[in-house]
Length: 279
Length: 281
Image (cartoon, rainbow over all chains, first blue to last red; front, side):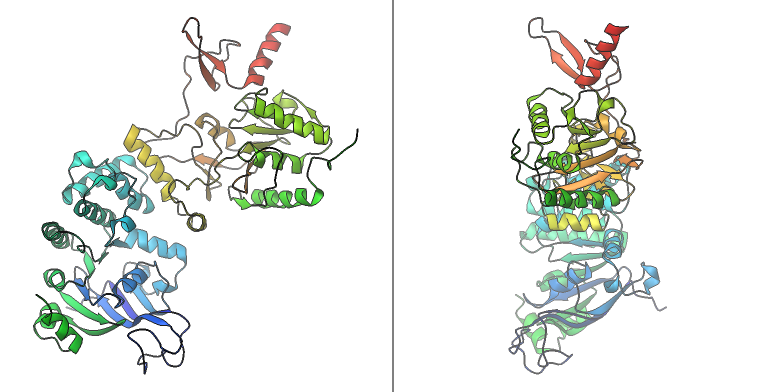
């Protein structure tokens, strides 16, 4: 059986700067990492293509500045892509390039079909609104106008991510980092989006909390069968979560394949270095 | 009398600029039109937005009424009235029916307004999404994309905290099914008066440099939830101690000597009108 992908991305490129003869094109001649020495243009993402299938977890690893987060920001429409196409199966039958849609349509896609969890809870949560209010924000954006239903859904989700129900009216500013991260996950999941984007969700948390957040992600993935893109510079996280993995370096994908394969038998010199530096 | 100022204080160029903003505001109901708010002889935050609208629209035949929180005689109302009469010479009245131009702070008069009347409301904070999103650049985008989750979210937060929507005033409204608008800090009681109003309603924010409008016969819906519908303040079983009116917006007062709590119409000219008619009959 061949499944059709939920999300198809082709030739995604994000450049900061105008670009010049030296740095444009798929195989530029001389670059300092991802900066063009001629015109100073930064190519944060270069010609990235991949597919995401239902229920699958796609890992993206790479060092800081390799373009992982920029890629995620582009997918969540927080940045305009310079070039490239993306198709989402649940939107117009996957026939329209979502990067070319109007900002209203993009907002619709973001509100209904995507969820994102940020490394920094400050970006994903409104710290001075109650936890259930944070979940409500996403539900209201998706068109729910019924307080009873929002409350019920909020309770259900917060229970799912182990936030005690009696604290649901509290503001996330009062919560620990791990709890904030779990509220973020609950918020991202509230509209049952088919695709969830996780950007370094465990970075900066202590080991035990890290493990509990990862556990939660794993459970949710199994129970709700959400497809996820997981970005991390931590190979252990990728090993635990991802079915397939892409390795990014200086804005480009240097290697991709099954996670086990990449970790056991890395081909690209950078991946080899990465795997060998794992403690 | 030597006239130190042009008619209605402003030079004609300024009036035209403000009128152009007003025309645009009427053409796009509920949309906040930026305008070059002038320096006024009163401080910003004291009704300069409303005053600029009034002065740019006023003509020699107009009859003006100014109210401050329902009262025709409060200091702010009197000062504004004085400025208008000194620079235009037009007549001021207290009777709502007689006025062609009504400038008001935080109330819509109890007497229903009619066609041909203009109500000018003074606005401190024109942006209904401001508490949700501090950046003007962002709120502009939200309006452009008709993304109003923030407005409902603020109401939701009140329900979470207090079990009901608790906006004392300035309860956000949807105008003509397109723009969410701050109706200025009028009590919720006055929100329904905006819906299909026969009079033109103009709102001016001097400090924030914005003008917006509800043209006559425009649908204005107060935001609410399916299971928590919008409600106005209830004054059931309450009567005005002076004129005996019911079903109008009341002030709750305490008699300092006896400690007795009593109510009185907030709209003083409405109350006075009733008292006068009683004396005549």
